[in-house]
Image (cartoon, rainbow, N blue to C red; front, top):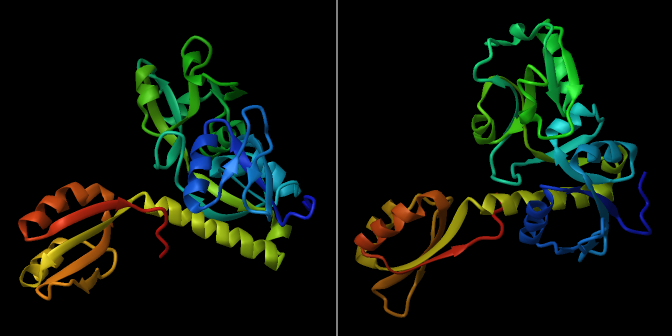
Length: 295
Protein backbone atom coordinates (compact mmCIF):
# COMPACT_ATOMS: atom_id res chain seq x y z
CA UNK A 1 0.00 0.00 0.00
CA UNK A 2 1.15 3.49 -0.81
CA UNK A 3 1.92 5.79 2.11
CA UNK A 4 3.35 8.83 0.43
CA UNK A 5 4.66 11.10 3.21
CA UNK A 6 1.29 11.79 4.76
CA UNK A 7 -0.52 12.33 1.46
CA UNK A 8 -3.93 10.69 1.27
CA UNK A 9 -3.60 9.48 -2.34
CA UNK A 10 -0.69 8.69 -4.62
CA UNK A 11 -1.97 9.22 -8.17
CA UNK A 12 -0.61 7.67 -11.36
CA UNK A 13 -0.84 10.03 -14.33
CA UNK A 14 -0.19 8.94 -17.94
CA UNK A 15 3.00 10.17 -19.56
CA UNK A 16 3.09 10.65 -23.30
CA UNK A 17 0.21 11.39 -25.67
CA UNK A 18 -2.38 11.45 -22.86
CA UNK A 19 -0.41 13.84 -20.65
CA UNK A 20 -1.64 17.16 -22.04
CA UNK A 21 -5.33 16.19 -22.32
CA UNK A 22 -5.16 14.74 -18.79
CA UNK A 23 -3.73 17.95 -17.34
CA UNK A 24 -6.37 19.95 -19.21
CA UNK A 25 -9.13 17.71 -17.84
CA UNK A 26 -7.88 18.07 -14.26
CA UNK A 27 -7.66 21.83 -14.71
CA UNK A 28 -11.27 21.97 -15.88
CA UNK A 29 -12.25 19.78 -12.92
CA UNK A 30 -10.66 22.33 -10.56
CA UNK A 31 -7.25 20.77 -9.91
CA UNK A 32 -4.09 22.60 -10.88
CA UNK A 33 -1.21 20.22 -11.66
CA UNK A 34 2.15 21.75 -12.51
CA UNK A 35 5.15 19.87 -13.85
CA UNK A 36 8.50 20.93 -15.22
CA UNK A 37 9.61 19.71 -18.64
CA UNK A 38 12.11 17.22 -17.17
CA UNK A 39 10.19 16.09 -14.10
CA UNK A 40 8.08 12.99 -13.71
CA UNK A 41 6.78 14.19 -10.36
CA UNK A 42 3.89 16.67 -10.69
CA UNK A 43 2.87 19.21 -8.08
CA UNK A 44 -0.81 19.20 -7.08
CA UNK A 45 -2.58 22.20 -5.57
CA UNK A 46 -4.50 19.70 -3.40
CA UNK A 47 -2.44 18.89 -0.25
CA UNK A 48 -3.97 15.40 -0.11
CA UNK A 49 -2.61 14.38 -3.50
CA UNK A 50 0.79 13.31 -4.75
CA UNK A 51 1.78 11.29 -7.78
CA UNK A 52 4.00 10.58 -10.73
CA UNK A 53 3.86 10.43 -14.50
CA UNK A 54 4.48 6.97 -15.94
CA UNK A 55 3.60 5.31 -19.22
CA UNK A 56 -0.10 4.48 -19.49
CA UNK A 57 0.90 0.91 -20.37
CA UNK A 58 2.40 0.48 -16.87
CA UNK A 59 -0.06 2.32 -14.62
CA UNK A 60 -2.45 -0.57 -14.01
CA UNK A 61 0.40 -2.74 -12.73
CA UNK A 62 1.63 -0.04 -10.33
CA UNK A 63 -1.93 0.49 -9.09
CA UNK A 64 -2.41 -3.24 -8.57
CA UNK A 65 0.89 -3.52 -6.68
CA UNK A 66 -0.08 -0.59 -4.42
CA UNK A 67 2.57 1.93 -5.46
CA UNK A 68 -0.33 4.11 -6.66
CA UNK A 69 -3.65 4.30 -4.85
CA UNK A 70 -5.32 5.18 -8.13
CA UNK A 71 -4.49 6.25 -11.66
CA UNK A 72 -5.64 6.98 -15.18
CA UNK A 73 -5.01 4.46 -17.93
CA UNK A 74 -6.77 2.73 -20.78
CA UNK A 75 -9.11 -0.18 -20.22
CA UNK A 76 -7.01 -1.98 -22.82
CA UNK A 77 -3.92 -1.90 -20.60
CA UNK A 78 -5.88 -3.20 -17.62
CA UNK A 79 -6.91 -6.16 -19.77
CA UNK A 80 -3.50 -6.58 -21.44
CA UNK A 81 -1.69 -6.55 -18.08
CA UNK A 82 -4.39 -8.72 -16.47
CA UNK A 83 -4.40 -6.22 -13.59
CA UNK A 84 -6.64 -6.92 -10.61
CA UNK A 85 -7.88 -3.39 -9.93
CA UNK A 86 -11.13 -1.48 -9.43
CA UNK A 87 -12.33 0.35 -12.54
CA UNK A 88 -13.96 3.34 -10.85
CA UNK A 89 -15.35 5.12 -13.90
CA UNK A 90 -14.99 5.59 -17.63
CA UNK A 91 -13.57 8.87 -18.93
CA UNK A 92 -13.89 9.04 -22.70
CA UNK A 93 -11.09 11.31 -23.81
CA UNK A 94 -7.86 10.82 -25.70
CA UNK A 95 -5.04 12.67 -27.42
CA UNK A 96 -7.16 13.44 -30.49
CA UNK A 97 -10.84 13.27 -29.62
CA UNK A 98 -13.50 12.28 -27.14
CA UNK A 99 -14.44 9.02 -28.84
CA UNK A 100 -13.91 5.41 -27.89
CA UNK A 101 -10.80 3.87 -29.44
CA UNK A 102 -10.53 0.36 -30.85
CA UNK A 103 -7.81 -2.25 -31.20
CA UNK A 104 -8.33 -3.64 -34.67
CA UNK A 105 -6.88 -6.43 -36.75
CA UNK A 106 -5.71 -4.94 -40.05
CA UNK A 107 -4.09 -6.22 -43.22
CA UNK A 108 -2.91 -4.61 -46.47
CA UNK A 109 -5.73 -3.73 -48.87
CA UNK A 110 -4.33 -6.27 -51.34
CA UNK A 111 -4.14 -9.09 -48.76
CA UNK A 112 -6.01 -12.34 -49.32
CA UNK A 113 -6.96 -12.33 -45.63
CA UNK A 114 -10.70 -11.67 -45.41
CA UNK A 115 -11.50 -13.00 -41.92
CA UNK A 116 -9.73 -14.09 -38.76
CA UNK A 117 -9.42 -17.76 -39.74
CA UNK A 118 -7.34 -16.73 -42.78
CA UNK A 119 -4.51 -15.77 -40.41
CA UNK A 120 -3.74 -19.39 -39.57
CA UNK A 121 0.05 -19.75 -39.60
CA UNK A 122 0.60 -16.07 -40.37
CA UNK A 123 2.71 -13.48 -38.53
CA UNK A 124 1.10 -10.58 -36.63
CA UNK A 125 2.76 -7.55 -35.03
CA UNK A 126 1.21 -5.64 -32.16
CA UNK A 127 1.80 -3.84 -28.88
CA UNK A 128 -0.96 -5.88 -27.18
CA UNK A 129 0.37 -9.41 -27.44
CA UNK A 130 -1.87 -10.96 -24.76
CA UNK A 131 -5.01 -9.40 -26.17
CA UNK A 132 -4.15 -10.61 -29.64
CA UNK A 133 -3.30 -14.15 -28.56
CA UNK A 134 -6.54 -14.39 -26.56
CA UNK A 135 -8.51 -13.18 -29.58
CA UNK A 136 -6.88 -15.72 -31.89
CA UNK A 137 -7.45 -18.52 -29.38
CA UNK A 138 -11.13 -17.58 -29.19
CA UNK A 139 -11.31 -18.13 -32.96
CA UNK A 140 -9.18 -21.32 -32.89
CA UNK A 141 -6.43 -19.68 -34.93
CA UNK A 142 -2.74 -20.39 -34.40
CA UNK A 143 -0.45 -17.59 -35.57
CA UNK A 144 2.89 -16.06 -34.64
CA UNK A 145 2.27 -12.90 -32.58
CA UNK A 146 5.27 -10.65 -31.99
CA UNK A 147 5.63 -7.47 -29.95
CA UNK A 148 5.94 -4.24 -31.89
CA UNK A 149 7.76 -1.21 -30.48
CA UNK A 150 5.72 1.27 -32.49
CA UNK A 151 5.04 2.41 -36.07
CA UNK A 152 3.37 -0.96 -36.42
CA UNK A 153 1.48 -0.02 -39.58
CA UNK A 154 4.72 0.28 -41.61
CA UNK A 155 5.64 -3.37 -41.00
CA UNK A 156 3.11 -4.84 -43.41
CA UNK A 157 3.36 -6.55 -45.77
CA UNK A 158 7.14 -6.87 -45.90
CA UNK A 159 7.78 -7.87 -42.26
CA UNK A 160 4.44 -9.26 -41.08
CA UNK A 161 1.16 -10.39 -42.61
CA UNK A 162 -1.12 -8.39 -40.32
CA UNK A 163 -1.12 -6.00 -37.40
CA UNK A 164 -3.28 -5.27 -34.39
CA UNK A 165 -3.25 -1.53 -33.82
CA UNK A 166 -5.13 1.16 -31.93
CA UNK A 167 -7.32 3.52 -33.91
CA UNK A 168 -9.86 6.25 -33.24
CA UNK A 169 -10.99 7.18 -36.73
CA UNK A 170 -9.15 4.68 -38.94
CA UNK A 171 -7.54 7.50 -40.93
CA UNK A 172 -3.96 6.39 -40.24
CA UNK A 173 -4.75 2.86 -41.35
CA UNK A 174 -6.37 4.08 -44.55
CA UNK A 175 -3.41 6.38 -45.20
CA UNK A 176 -1.16 3.34 -45.03
CA UNK A 177 -3.48 1.36 -47.33
CA UNK A 178 -4.60 -1.01 -44.62
CA UNK A 179 -7.99 -2.71 -44.30
CA UNK A 180 -9.69 -3.59 -41.00
CA UNK A 181 -10.60 -7.27 -40.71
CA UNK A 182 -12.07 -7.29 -37.21
CA UNK A 183 -12.24 -5.36 -33.92
CA UNK A 184 -10.52 -6.99 -30.95
CA UNK A 185 -11.41 -4.56 -28.15
CA UNK A 186 -13.08 -1.19 -27.68
CA UNK A 187 -11.32 0.89 -25.07
CA UNK A 188 -11.30 4.26 -23.32
CA UNK A 189 -9.52 5.93 -20.43
CA UNK A 190 -10.53 4.68 -16.97
CA UNK A 191 -9.94 5.91 -13.44
CA UNK A 192 -8.74 2.80 -11.64
CA UNK A 193 -8.02 2.13 -7.96
CA UNK A 194 -5.97 -0.28 -5.91
CA UNK A 195 -8.34 -2.72 -4.19
CA UNK A 196 -6.87 -2.16 -0.72
CA UNK A 197 -7.04 1.61 -1.12
CA UNK A 198 -10.63 1.31 -2.31
CA UNK A 199 -11.46 -0.54 0.91
CA UNK A 200 -10.28 2.43 3.03
CA UNK A 201 -13.33 4.72 3.46
CA UNK A 202 -11.33 7.97 3.48
CA UNK A 203 -9.38 7.04 0.35
CA UNK A 204 -12.46 5.74 -1.45
CA UNK A 205 -14.40 8.93 -0.69
CA UNK A 206 -11.57 11.05 -2.11
CA UNK A 207 -11.30 8.91 -5.25
CA UNK A 208 -15.07 9.10 -5.78
CA UNK A 209 -15.01 12.89 -5.44
CA UNK A 210 -12.24 13.13 -8.02
CA UNK A 211 -14.18 10.77 -10.31
CA UNK A 212 -17.30 12.90 -10.04
CA UNK A 213 -15.42 16.11 -10.88
CA UNK A 214 -13.54 14.57 -13.81
CA UNK A 215 -16.78 13.16 -15.23
CA UNK A 216 -18.49 16.52 -14.72
CA UNK A 217 -15.66 18.30 -16.55
CA UNK A 218 -15.94 15.91 -19.49
CA UNK A 219 -19.72 16.24 -19.57
CA UNK A 220 -19.43 20.02 -19.61
CA UNK A 221 -17.56 19.83 -22.90
CA UNK A 222 -20.77 18.73 -24.59
CA UNK A 223 -22.88 21.62 -23.28
CA UNK A 224 -22.91 25.42 -23.25
CA UNK A 225 -24.79 27.89 -21.10
CA UNK A 226 -27.30 30.21 -22.72
CA UNK A 227 -28.80 33.45 -21.39
CA UNK A 228 -31.38 35.58 -23.15
CA UNK A 229 -34.15 38.11 -22.66
CA UNK A 230 -37.59 37.84 -24.18
CA UNK A 231 -40.97 39.58 -23.97
CA UNK A 232 -43.47 37.59 -21.90
CA UNK A 233 -45.72 37.48 -24.92
CA UNK A 234 -43.11 35.47 -26.80
CA UNK A 235 -41.86 33.35 -23.89
CA UNK A 236 -43.64 30.16 -24.88
CA UNK A 237 -42.29 30.31 -28.44
CA UNK A 238 -38.78 30.72 -27.00
CA UNK A 239 -39.25 27.83 -24.57
CA UNK A 240 -40.52 25.58 -27.33
CA UNK A 241 -37.25 26.24 -29.19
CA UNK A 242 -34.99 25.21 -26.29
CA UNK A 243 -33.97 21.51 -25.94
CA UNK A 244 -32.90 22.06 -22.32
CA UNK A 245 -31.15 19.57 -20.03
CA UNK A 246 -33.62 20.64 -17.35
CA UNK A 247 -36.41 23.18 -17.30
CA UNK A 248 -34.84 26.60 -17.87
CA UNK A 249 -34.62 29.25 -15.18
CA UNK A 250 -36.98 32.17 -15.78
CA UNK A 251 -36.51 35.44 -13.87
CA UNK A 252 -38.33 38.78 -14.04
CA UNK A 253 -36.63 41.90 -15.37
CA UNK A 254 -37.10 45.53 -14.33
CA UNK A 255 -39.54 45.85 -17.22
CA UNK A 256 -42.50 43.75 -16.08
CA UNK A 257 -43.27 42.79 -19.66
CA UNK A 258 -39.91 41.03 -20.08
CA UNK A 259 -38.21 38.01 -18.51
CA UNK A 260 -34.70 36.56 -18.51
CA UNK A 261 -34.20 32.91 -19.46
CA UNK A 262 -31.15 30.82 -18.61
CA UNK A 263 -30.45 27.20 -19.52
CA UNK A 264 -27.84 24.83 -20.93
CA UNK A 265 -28.00 23.13 -24.32
CA UNK A 266 -25.83 20.76 -26.30
CA UNK A 267 -22.93 22.49 -27.98
CA UNK A 268 -23.55 20.63 -31.23
CA UNK A 269 -27.00 22.22 -31.70
CA UNK A 270 -26.38 25.75 -30.44
CA UNK A 271 -25.60 27.13 -33.90
CA UNK A 272 -29.04 26.00 -35.06
CA UNK A 273 -30.87 27.15 -31.93
CA UNK A 274 -29.59 30.74 -31.64
CA UNK A 275 -31.03 31.95 -34.98
CA UNK A 276 -34.36 30.29 -34.12
CA UNK A 277 -34.40 32.00 -30.73
CA UNK A 278 -33.75 35.36 -32.38
CA UNK A 279 -36.56 34.72 -34.87
CA UNK A 280 -38.93 33.86 -32.00
CA UNK A 281 -38.33 37.12 -30.16
CA UNK A 282 -35.27 36.52 -27.97
CA UNK A 283 -32.77 39.36 -27.50
CA UNK A 284 -29.45 39.82 -25.70
CA UNK A 285 -28.52 36.20 -26.32
CA UNK A 286 -25.29 35.18 -24.57
CA UNK A 287 -23.53 31.83 -25.00
CA UNK A 288 -20.86 30.84 -22.44
CA UNK A 289 -18.68 27.76 -21.82
CA UNK A 290 -19.14 25.43 -18.86
CA UNK A 291 -16.50 23.84 -16.65
CA UNK A 292 -18.60 21.14 -15.00
CA UNK A 293 -22.02 19.56 -15.42
CA UNK A 294 -23.03 17.31 -12.52
CA UNK A 295 -26.09 15.12 -12.94
